Image 1 (cartoon, helix red, strand yellow):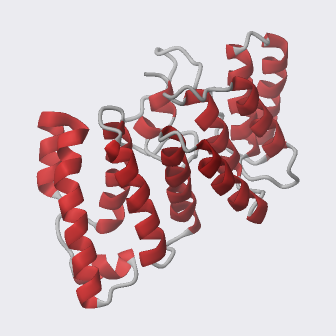
Image 2: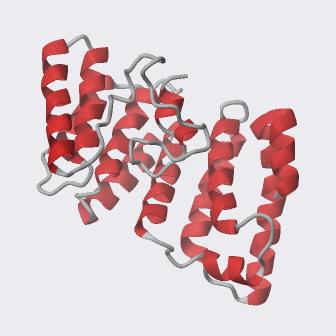
Length: 246
């Protein structure tokens, strides 16, 4: 694991992923041999300089970054997410939700959009209040590096999420929609949804969101690329709002 971190600094995500995929195979072998069924159990039994809980999330992120240069790494990301889902007992709701997003996003970037749509639709039918599920699905159509970009579909999904009674992270969905509408040149609608986002944040007692996707660099909160994104997604900044501003 540590060798992969060192390689990432020198050669970037592809080099790191080649080392880390070997490490992942070793983790799987250890789990099979020891009968380990949870990430926390692994960390309790094999404590070291790096925890599996943190490292596996970094591996998911690096496979996504490396997939820009080598699409085979996106397929590896799919395999990793599916293996982790079935092999390990759920750690917490946020980890499960983030891994689901990573899985569906990877299928989308591989061109398997019907598969990605089916995954998101199934999860959101079971848990329609999952606000960042609606955002993640919408983002696939907005920020994709494939030919499947569809801003109308992206808008439709955000509006569908906002229509769900009791949806979590309402303010984040509204803010995402406001930013999309600005991109489409619909400033009046964008201002309306921006106000909805701020009102919802105030009601819930959240910190102001500052429109992370559209603020100028001098006003953007200072956040490290490996810190959690201040928008509340539970993802690292570099894989969330930070990636949108590159």
